[in-house]
Image (cartoon, rainbow, N blue to C red; front, top):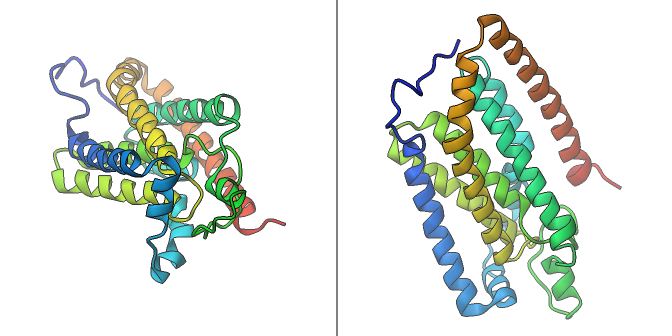
Length: 256
């Protein structure tokens, strides 16, 4: 069972291993902001979306699903529950916060922001669109981008303690997943930049503020209580995995 490290090492930065990951994301965001500034909201999409090759056209529509946070998050959780229950709890809370913020933003605050296919279709402009579905509405922000930053950020934190190359590599992978949303033609550059910023904020706040408290709280509980929490997490993660697979297949692959 978990032992509290909070009192033993209070001066250790809880997200130290995430620095290379966050730096890579920041560099990508700076490049994106420069492109947005030079070419504008619609112009930056048209410019970047025009660069494509047949090989990526084949894999990107499927690769982009790595940003499907609930599915990937459930898989990661199942491997971590036994030894890192408190981290899994923090992970689940981060994903729930992501779902709420992105959901409210898309469905309420920015419900009238249309996706590239709708915007340019109305103007008679062809775009490079290879998504598995023709998404038209709820463009801002990119939920896949938000979830990708959170999910791969937690994964990086969990596996790359003091391993700079691995942490940086995870940052590059995350950027590739984020960029895939623009590549396949379902999001503007501004959408993925906003989504990435939201994801990074949720990631840092969860790991620095919530996770230490959860870890300390769980370490004070009895072994029986901790075992019960683990069982509950297995049930939640397993059920979520099954539902996510069904949702992914029915939404993108087996739909009428």
